[in-house]
Image 1 (cartoon, one colour):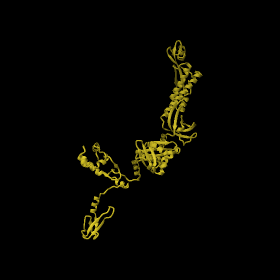
Image 2: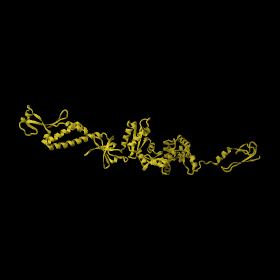
Image 3: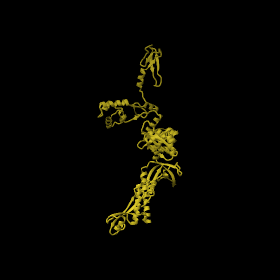
Image 4: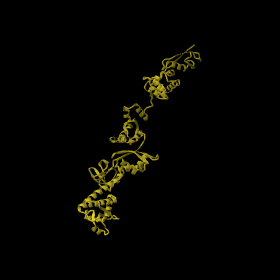
Length: 516
């Protein structure tokens, strides 16, 4: 019988967090191990605890026989009667064994096994407790440091904060309070290993959940976080409610919330920006605090984009050692190139792309849209395009001189189709005669303005058209001042004979009067 064992059991439960049932089972195994070491077997050993748990007993179950062949498992009738007068041959008796009768070696062996069992139980218990806490915040205290790794007292056990998971800004001293996130829980030969981190992006997310109620209750959600520990963190947020500003909720009134988070991160810079489904707007936001004038998608398949900024914003957009744009790249998952307007103008990229950016800046006027293929004509049917293509007619310049009769002669083109084609050409196409002839523009574009800007002639007026226009113009009689025209040979008012002489188009007309 072992007295006072209940206190020892309760002490183990309190100190090591092991359940009482597991401790009692360990004590039972200890006694059975000692019994086996003493008697060679434990098959007939029975361990029982008192109802209050303060006492523990170990018994040897023995069978009553006439002649004893195995004293460990058998007992004679004469000896059995001493324990119980009603004993008979064939019965079994439980005979109490005093643990003090065990030899020293047996007890020592049992103790070692019990300690090992208790360690395994404690490891399994703590593992079950902490494995469910991976990703959660925990607070501990600086205990010691070895090879840059910090060991943190977590109460029941010890955690380790590896050097690679420490922010370069932070310096720790003994007994310092450390808030960290549980990153891994592993079973090792030396015991349970709880790995902590303060550099993971989820660590920042947990801090925002603690400091910003809207993030905790999912009113505001964090789309993505990227971080360069100790230097800068960028996180994109969005709101599930129209009346809640996601950025304002994270920053707090007068920046109270964000300042608290910055203090926890030892002064690390934090950019909170709004997530936008539109990649151009998202890239603009991601490059904050820089002010981006515009974003151009260079190659959507390769996810390449160009951000154009003012000269004074270039260094801010790129950041120290490229940190700002590098984090923006990771946040939006695009390859972002940052240029000023001057640098962009010197870039050898598609004309359409440059025109789009220039138009956004308001630096150029709308230019003509040049078309060459019949398929580009507005309102032309696919069937007609296919028929013309089969007959070798694909370009608008080939179609222009063809009359409706010429079109009808083409197999598959009816009179209605021919009329439609000519109508589309008359309404939508304007031919500009210039040095590089043959260019065709859609109606409504500023082709004439463009042609004039390049020094090309936009119209050619024939001499016959010039004479007809002059014939309709009114002139003044040199004698009486009456109204006359080029077709008159004499003034209808005063009767004076008239003759008209014209030099080139740019000179003034001369009108001479002759007396009849």
